[in-house]
Length: 181
Image (tube, rainbow, N blue to C red; front, side):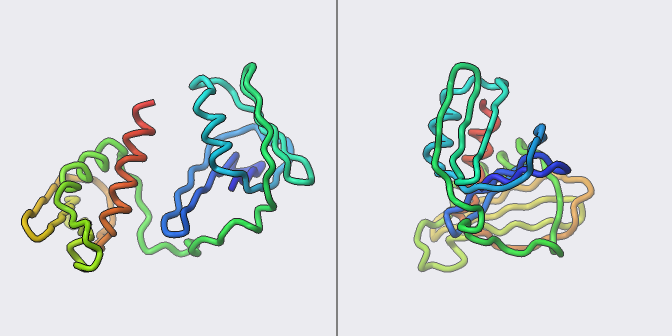
């Protein structure tokens, strides 16, 4: 889903109904609004656009979108933003912090090989993420291996949770792809 506001620029949100990711970027917004566009069409368009090239997005009242960048142009039929699945309410988050993409990618990569792919094994298919006393520690184990990665972090609130290893792996791959462009 794409949401354009005069105050916040453009927020792009995607979900597979288990994981939700979003990013807000600065944009010159003429008219605010929202639209849900097919991810395959957006991906195909972005794969042929030159990095750093400005992109123009125009959406009409029937949710048809035109994306233009240089000589590349695509038209996509979208849907009302209300068709997009609602995400969790994060108005009062229990954890809110910023961490370097390179650091997060490194600690995920250090333990990813030890996550059990057997989801029936409960905690073994998860990755423990703990922030305490200025240290970020990430641990994963299957029936044969244990992997732990720990690094110093500044100004992060305490946290202790288990994240499904498959989802954390997807985050690591997304970071690697985003930072390699």
